[in-house]
Image 1 (cartoon, one colour):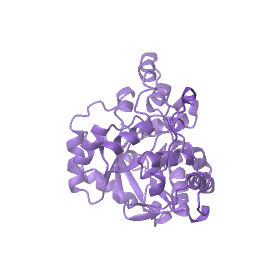
Image 2 (image 1 turned 90 degrees about the horizontal axis):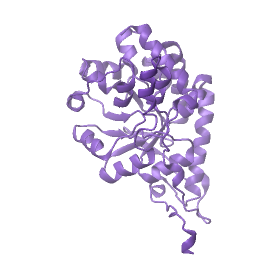
Image 3 (image 1 turned 60 degrees about the vertical axis):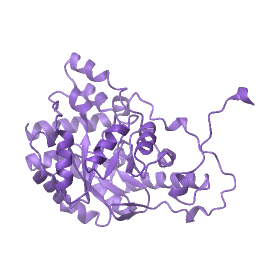
Length: 349
């Protein structure tokens, strides 16, 4: 596949994701159904609340990950630079988009060691697609992706639905788990398994952990739908109809977090998919997430500049802090145990 074709596809993706009406999942992520029990006497000082988290041995100022974003080479370079500067200023983690273009064409998209220079103290996560692992990629390519940005870990993104409905997508996924296991046993950095918006089930999460994955990003349904994105890209009416039928496909984000946490109590979990604000982030942590990721929600800011990204996350962080305060949670451990209101039945009063 040519450099121009891949870059053009990524540019299409970016244009579509920037318009939520074209890219949004038809699935409710599930956070609105949850209500914290308000604590009218928190006995806390707001500024003393500890929302620090740890990822790959590095302390974060808040339990946040700027999730993977991508685009054609020119815009991706600008986006990655803005995000790296912001992540360092905020003290939060940063995951880059797929590095396939950089590995196959030499168009680095800003994914060079300069990214580490811009963000020297925060976790950086490299990114490859699972489909590439059974189409010729191996330890050498994975190591190149890690070395390219001096990453702390490597994301293997799982997007079978997108590949199935995308024109020219990778449809042969036989051997993916074995390929991930081989990579986990030989790569010197941890692996993160991440869906892209359809969710990871408890059974699949356990299989991924069993083959050596260190972190699960459930990336549930409720945010960007890549089936909807591919439907928007499709020129053929039949292909569009196939893709559009799956705009409501996937495990809702809130459910995915709760069920994977229940099935895998010791796993390190990232919640992404439909996170709108700091209250959603607080709910995700209450359901069992260790970290919360956001991508599409910050994309507009990422195109403007690092200051806009910083302002965006400062709002989210303060919302999260207020949610802790109003649940009487002095830290994230306490927030994970904060009471939720049971559904109200007026007839029971």
